[in-house]
Amino acid sequence: MSENKGNAILLFTCPDQNGIVAKISQFIYQGGGNIIYLDEHVNQNQQFFSLRVVWNMNQFNISAKQLHQAFEPIAKQFQAHWRIEFSETKLRVAIFVSKYDHCLQEILWRYHMNEYQIEIPLIISNHPDLQNIAEANNIPYHVFPISKENKAEQEAKEIALLRENKIDLVVLARYMQVLSPDFIQAFQNKIINIHHSFLPGFVGGNPYKQAYERGVKIIGATSHYVTEELDEGPIIEQDIMRITHKDTINDLVRKGRDLERIVLARALRYKAEHRIIVDGTRTIVFD
Ligand SMILES: Nc1nc2c(c(=O)[nH]1)N[C@@H](CN(C=O)c1ccc(C(=O)N[C@@H](CCC(=O)O)C(=O)O)cc1)CN2
Image (cartoon, rainbow, N blue to C red; front, side, top):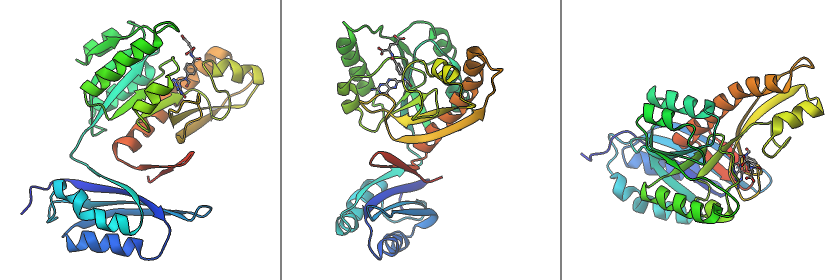
């Protein structure tokens, strides 16, 4: 009996055709696996099929190490893009912050509540302000002040530190610096951000002032993958709340904090549970 424990999660995309689910289910069934979750989506425009299937590995007769090789022929048959993750493997997450602590505190609280199958080896910031929170949570805190003159040099040090710590995911928890293309390329689809507006409205560093001056009646928050284009990455999660003419900018900032915390917390859960497929400029979130 193999040492397999926990679940395997397959994320699979390919040109749509008959027999995909049957073939994959047969592979899992013949391996002795018990499917506990399966969801699929067909992108009607591009005729692209996407699938998330989860099966329990306890009785599965192919080891985690051999699984990729064993599944490869099926993936090749369907010209698929795919990856297999394991629920027992914790996602290694680095949190980037500036001076606002609300999103950081939310993640740390849920982390200590074991809401996520993650590890947080380090926190990185461009300011020393939140060092006390990191120390209170026994997490190393690294400060890299950023200016136009030193951004490339500082980011190179940050990338080296992230690689040294085998980081799988970078979470920008109100990190108020624009990351360079080199940084984005070093962590393709491995950086998520919380933007404090209902995108595509009010991109940039000061959306609440923009929202107030525009006189909107609804504000929101958006978590998205980070791309070179500011606030343009594929959206993972959004939420909104109604406001009125009585709300000052400070009221919008206060009310918006709650939205930012909950939206980023949900997006991180979707990442940690391997529920997201990036489909061009969009995402498929299997919830
Ligand atoms: N390459 C990207 N980097 C970042 C993104 C992104 O989408 N792509 N999102 C931001 C977060 N953010 C909005 O959500 C944001 C942060 C900062 C700014 C900004 O204009 N910053 C100024 C400096 C401000 C300061 O020093 O306080 C700047 O970088 O020149 C806009 C949007 C995180 N990074």
